[in-house]
Amino acid sequence: MIIFRYLCREVLSTTLAVCIILLLILVSGRLVKYLAQVAASAMDPSVMVAMLGYRIPGFLELTLPLAFFLALLLCLGRMHVENEISVLYACGFSEKKLLLYTMLIASTLAAAVGYLSLVVSPSGMAKVGVIADAQRARGEIDDLVAKKFYSLRGGKGVIYADQVSAERGLEDVFMVVTDPASESSVARVVVMVAKSGEQQRTEIADDQYLILNRGYRVDGVPGDHRYQITDFAEYGIRLANEQSFRENIEVEAMPTRDLWNSSDPKLQVALQWRLSIPLMMFVVTLLAWPLSRTKPRQGRYSKLLPAILLYLSYLVGLNTLRGSIESGALPASLTLMPLHMFFIAIGIALIFVDPAMRRLRRRLSWPVTDS
Image 1 (cartoon, rainbow, N blue to C red):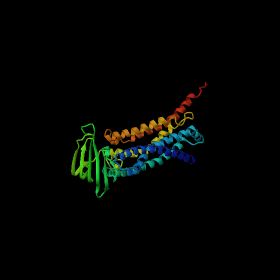
Image 2 (cartoon, rainbow, N blue to C red):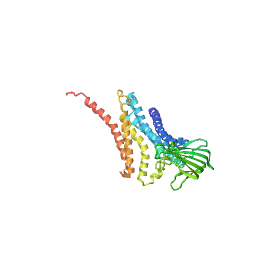
Image 3 (cartoon, one colour):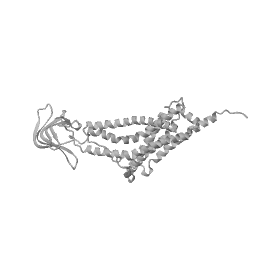
Image 4 (cartoon, one colour):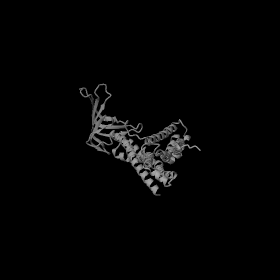
């Protein structure tokens, strides 16, 4: 039990440290994407933290297998280099028992990852989908504040309103829009001043319009004295939609039971992927066990690069097989299990090949004596 607690402490602490680093990398990448959406006025800054929080379970289910794999390589490699494994074997502690202890740790993490993959992550992505739908329903000038200039999406212009309210809309509106598609080398500028305005959305095409009332429009090219001034009682301006918020998470947000009852190949392979993530914990354990065997003179990091390349080939193979099944190139009945079994076979082979090679070298090195 003391050996088991020691192994748990070393492996789990390293797993936690590596997982935090990987999680920060993933969160930073997603944060950059969300900040770009906020800068384009396609996303409310107040919901950015909430969306990141709901995505963390999905990030964890991806980072935990890799973090556990690296933790096993580092911890077991250090124990080999410092001869702790040799001392355990000399004291009668078998390799099978130590591997069983490692599998028990992997089982605990597999249960946690399975719960994240099958329950928590889909629930979080469903909440992300609700927020994304709310963001898509936002108008372009919903963030307009009274007495402050507000930039339109794409840098096409600015708008200003002296009063902004949900009941009365905009009052004393000033708006400047540039038209870079004009015939002259200088962009055409359109200036509009109106007593009031309101934002409307069409139900058919889901387009957004700003309706200005009782004002005038000045259209011309800066530097040219030929301007066109038009008075209007009502004037409609189509607002940009090309940078509206988008999140393609329909399959990721589906509950696991819906995937289980579906016959769609795309949904079936999504279910297989969710089931594959906890299985990866056992596969990486079998791969890390033989790859962590290092001699004291080799150093604990001698096999780290080949191990990472092997893990990447495993992950890329799973994604490639998943994409082939989703596209219909391969039947859904194939599942992802053959690739898991292939790498399990590689891990088992590596476990038994190294001791067999050592025994063979010892036999070949015996001196030959004449009778």
